[in-house]
Length: 503
Image (cartoon, rainbow, N blue to C red; front, side, top):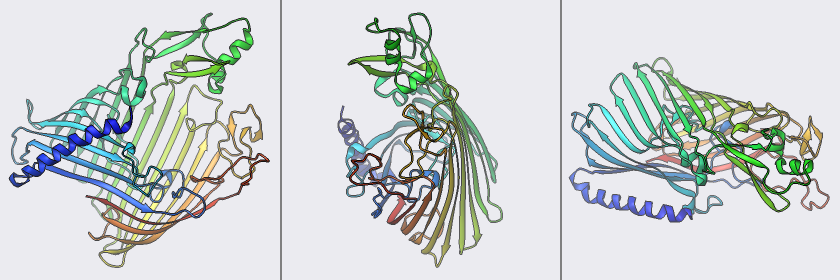
């Protein structure tokens, strides 16, 4: 179904709520709306797509495109913070990353989605407990310089949750189904349960949480987890799987055979994530420090399809993709270095991602990433400021080369040598990236690195050890018929006029 067809009814429903809220505004404003937006003019004269680098590991500034979100709440029974009376409300969020004339999506509504819709009720059955049915995203906070939510659970689920809050503790538990987020159009139910607990001590906070997923064995359901086995009971070779050569190798070894040659054996599968958080601040120059961590076991892939001699073969690969893990740690510290003169926010991120099934292929499933970002903001006066941000990052492949350092570097390779059967790419296992951004900032609401709205005119420069390490329209083929030729670009420059605000 077209994304427009699913979005339009949602928009109409929400606009109906808006109209109802407007009508009720005179009697207490039951409807509330707020959101976020960023838009920029960022012409890239080096042939890029307007973003300084590939992703937010180098800091979100100049590495993100346009974005907008709208959050809406309608109070069916308004909450009185001074009483324990029952209350209930409906919440919705529409968000997406496209604006007319600012990106290739040209503002199409197909780039937006109704990402959250839920109803809440408080003080029903239990005092100080909020019940929620619908989407259930919850997180301890985010790394503002990266726009990363490291300590996050239940964002992929729809279901029911209960949250207990007082001045000392904040506890949430939820259960639901993550099948649509994980499996998409190949939907199979994935029951999940998760929760968080946070202790609030004034100048410090500590939190833990987690989520567990279980996809049951369902015999006869082609979207349920299975493992393909040969007639003799042996399993698929991993190298043939990653090369997409399962069927080719089988028929080479068995030329007289025809048709399907594996059997899907049903199985059940699990995945999980654990999160942690420590926050402290409010003394000396330290405004606040957030430390987040997670450890994740990714949900296995269900199947792949190969085409050989005009015939499609489906192979079930749960056992070949069920050991993919991640460890991620992020810290962000906000400092007021000189009162009303200079602020600093710095952040660091470390990630170690590994696939215990895969010891042969260079990919982002087996890598180590690390970076540090620092943003200074100096104040000429309350509203006119100067921003300076810099970042340094390293990304290292754990299974060999993954990056091309020059326009004439090899593509498919083994240990940096050209090899048409190689499982590596390029001539280096490491990408080092340095970025710097500087420019004037106007903030009508005053001082603060995260005060919005923020009107910025910025210059950014990136140096990367990888060639052409930014979105671009270059032709990189080394073919003699490449009429455009190739080029070596390690420095990338952009200028951006942009605005970002909460409202």
